[in-house]
Amino acid sequence: MARREWQEVLDSNREALIRAVDSLTDEQSRLRLVPSLTTPIGLVKHCAAAERIWFQRTVGGLTESQCDGYARGDDASWAVPAEQTLAQVIAEYRAAAARSREIARTAADDDVFVHYRRGAVTFSWICAHMIEELARHAGHADILVEQISATG
Image 1 (cartoon, rainbow, N blue to C red):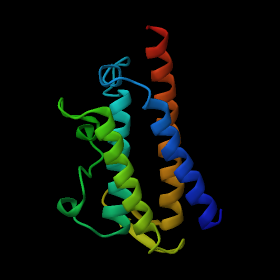
Image 2: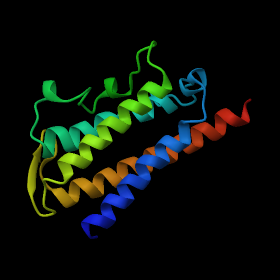
Image 3: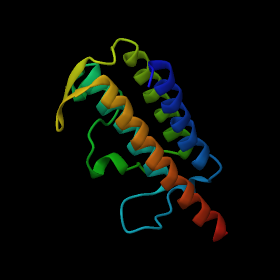
Image 4: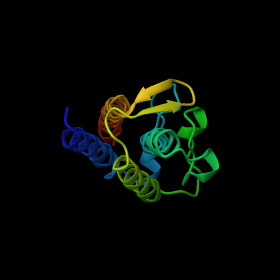
């Protein structure tokens, strides 16, 4: 896949995630309908962390403390403070994605980066992984929102 194409697919999945949840109220976005930590707002928060992990930390070489928000892929990446609204989490995600786009412009497809858990991966692999990650979570969001809408 050419760079322009993967960027378009990645951006399309980013927007699909946002579109899936942006009609919810703050209360609805926090509904937990599955045993895991997954909530609509949590999906967006987690994807912001994924953007930071892969682009800011791995490609950009930033330390965790230099990232513009939480940048680990553990359970805490799903946690949303009670005072943070869905609109704020979406804005946070959009900012993380914008920073990812900036950092992505500095990398060539065959550049190799070392991820703190996966080890050495190419930039192309990172992009394919992020497309997969975002598509999966946008689908989760679609299903959760459908369930929330069906219950009233």
